[in-house]
Length: 74
Image (cartoon, rainbow, N blue to C red; front, side, top):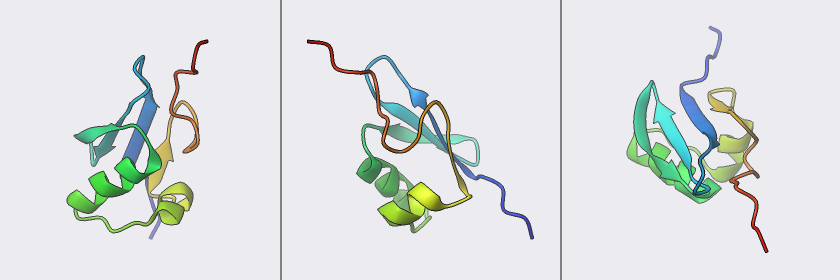
C-alpha cells in the first residue's frame, strides 16, 4: 500500500504560524513543532516530534519543520 500525505503543514503566514490540516480539515495554526504534534494527537494520530519530521504521511509546504517564518526584523 502506498502512503500518501494525510497531514499538510502549510507555508508560514504573515504572523509566523503555519496552518495544519488533516485529511483536508483544519486542525489548528502551529507556531512550532510541538504544536503540530499536539494537533495530530487531538486528531487521533500519535506521532512524536521525530516522526512528524520524517513521516511520509506529513507534507511540509513552504519550508521544512525548522522554518516557522517570518524572519525576525531588528
